[in-house]
Length: 319
Image (tube, rainbow, N blue to C red; front, side, top):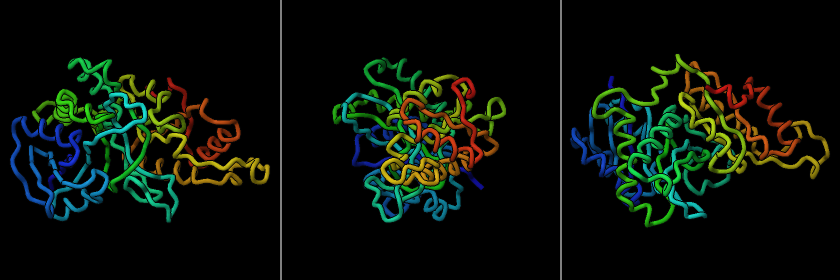
């Protein structure tokens, strides 16, 4: 049974199709079967799918590919644009999900309420590799190389990561940025031969500790400081907006975590469960951005992590 990696790009986004085309210009690709009107290309155990919808709109591509071909999808990697209020040029890597949304809420960028995809173990190692490749192509310091918090769809049930170019039309169209993302995937998956990067099954015997980021802003600066160190594994990154908590003082004055409303527990639990499935044999350790929480929030979150059996780590506990 063939295990494959799915790469997914959309023709309607230059930050998605340009890296895909850069990859297709490298040796070894041949046309594969079409999934409805989605074209595919194959190279060793990698399958590149090109569709023409929003990148967050095509759900369950992993299951649909398995049904079409009989191949088993091991992981899914998406190419996309990144938008930011700052318009700052950036190359980003992140896990996906909307674990904080409640049933009945409408996800504005795909996914389904309460869902978090299994996070790809490659996220940390590829962030570091991306930084190296971007520096060697003189994209740093113009482009920031960064993680992002867990957000948006589409729905997948396999280990997933997003690779994004930001943050305005000028940068989405930058061919040098597209080339760097393509090289990251080419080297990271060892499509041209050699050893792939961020292979949990092969590498976790050296370090099986996995960072689950809790709190902080969208670009996860406190967590980033740790993940940039060699050998660190990272999973979901729950920014403050993914941890809705209702201030107990505004309700009944009782600050036990049982009384704190909001979907923060659901969000942590879904992300933790997705992480355990993505990192078999891993020791999942939470890393809190302490300064981002009020004391009642930190107490509640610490208590709930204890209930889940998740220990809380300091930076040195991850490498």
